[in-house]
Image (cartoon, rainbow, N blue to C red):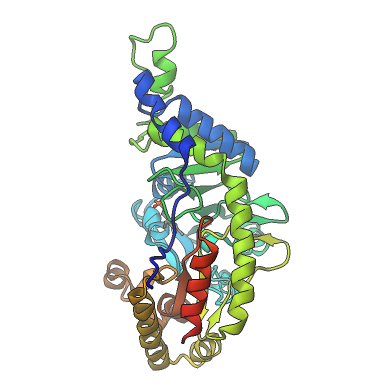
Length: 395
Ligand SMILES: Cc1ncc(COP(=O)(O)O)c(C=O)c1O
């Protein structure tokens, strides 16, 4: 019998159904008390001093890029293997996303290659905590200090990702979580800026709201509500609705359980992959907590690494065809898999703009072609897991 196993599944129960209708009762459906409560819960979980909810992680990345003062001519170093929005938030402001290759062990930026990318124009580094594993922040912070660079962390996948107990997003100026449904908790769309800097938090709260000095909720609930507030900055509408805030409140109460369950699943997957040598489980350095937004494996690790070392594009393409045929067969028996993420330098936008070739960033290109994300969500049942590994075992 064919089972249908999705790549991920959000965890919703009565709490979400109950809370998401609350804004309907009061009629206050734009950013309001539930967004505030969601922010407070995330601040408590991450131990960020300040949290600012936004319409998506991409919006938050854009806001942070404004706050650190990116202007045309500036350069920002980003990994080439990430979601395209990390680079777009830089390019939108006329600055240049300078790609850096990744480390095949962690899928995060290769810290050994960052320094050679730094020029007089470099203003910042945007590390990405891909799939929930924090990037090597101690090395990145050393470079930021040495060259006086800003650090904005792409924590879209990073909920629960920590280094020595410190949550990602809090190493530099700020970081942004995503609540897209592929993430550990979801508000449909949504994001959250984490920062320990009060000035950045105030500015971010204003920039998400047209540059307003006071939120609509605060104005409507204070004396003189008939007067509009002052607008000081060039802002935009990147607010989260209170429906999403309410959903977030219900989801936030599940974070500890979701992450604990994902850790137990990751341990089990790692064990079971011991018998499947053609998929390499994720690597977690000592002192790091993986958030396990995605369980991303590497296809035929030995051959892949050999192909990268030899700069062998043909071999990467041959392995890619093999990987895809297995993924297609898994799809035909109801099992969803995905490539981990994409190599941004070979997306048409960046190829056309900068003339990049695949092997300009060979590890990122190989990761694009040769990663396999497995179905991974807290409610995946034992029989679904047995079915998944039975099917994987057939190859
Ligand atoms: C690494 C990374 N950055 C940014 C984003 C964008 O997040 P959002 O969809 O909330 O804008 C994603 C989403 O998949 C991501 O994986």
